[in-house]
View 1 (cartoon, each protein chain N blue to C red):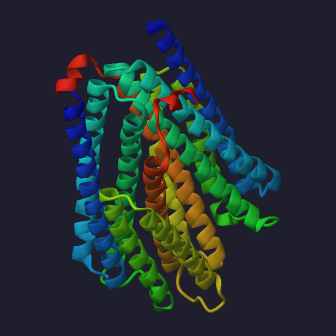
View 2 (view 1 turned 135 degrees about the vertical axis):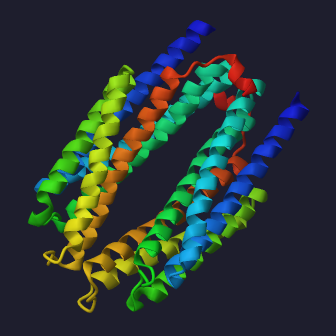
View 3 (view 1 turned 90 degrees about the horizontal axis):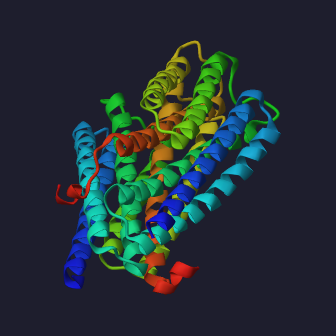
Length: 219
Length: 219
């Protein structure tokens, strides 16, 4: 029974990594769509996000089945419960990236990002893409260093998010309201994607570093 | 054992209702903060959101403990798993409302909502408040009619969210970028709060109408 349970846990982990890998591609495509006004990349991101929803749903079903069949306790139980939350976060990340792709699609063939903000968005998108790449790695093999570098990158994303507002609220900003709306939302989406990576990595770190035992039932 | 389990399920439900009730107050305070430039209401919303985070965390611990002790299957298991998702949604709703309160706080003593948008935001806030009230009711006593009216109210919120953009993108809009940023984000937050209510109500309806049995393990 334990052996079967271990196989199921392994399959759960593989599927989470697979979903995270799809999210990495979607965030990459959505960034390209926004920064290069690339409509094909936008469509790939939108299609990819639909696929992630399906995969997350089917993973959740597997987790619920595993809970019902094996009635795990302590650390095993917490891993499975965390998986449900991680899959929900990954699904949200894909949805946020698809919103970025939609902004790019609406403005095509123009770019939604005015010149004054192209460096800021370029760095923000690169950081989000790297965060997603690190997340895939972390979900494959937990590492405290990796979790720490995720935290640092997220702080920089928050700074860039504030920088977007500083530029938009500066007297020099002469763009139309449509551009203000686009960059406000796009910046918010990039920031939320990075937040989700941090949330997931805290959950993973917690599971690996905490000393779980059946005693935690009496906490 | 079954009796103890039923008591725990009851306590889980009571706590969810209590958290939803706090979220209702927070959304009400945040709306008042934004529409009336009421800084005290903003502070109440911010404090309330912190409380919701703590309550959601402690509820999640109770659910995990119940899963470990009673190893429920079928419908009972799905109720508990859904509770984890519902508490995460309620926590996000409180966070979104606190973002609205923060916008109001930043612009105080001015209002963050220009005259041209006050009717739209007034209706959107009222709908969100009513949605939260309905959600509390639904979590107390499931009702198919209630779930349906939640769906309808959310569609109206989506319309109002689009209306905000129409007004902002119209030639007549002469506000500064700071106002464009504020209303873009505030409208997005109201829309997301309503989305969460719909998500939660679909989960509740699903649990009440689906014919759960142990067979669902073989699906």
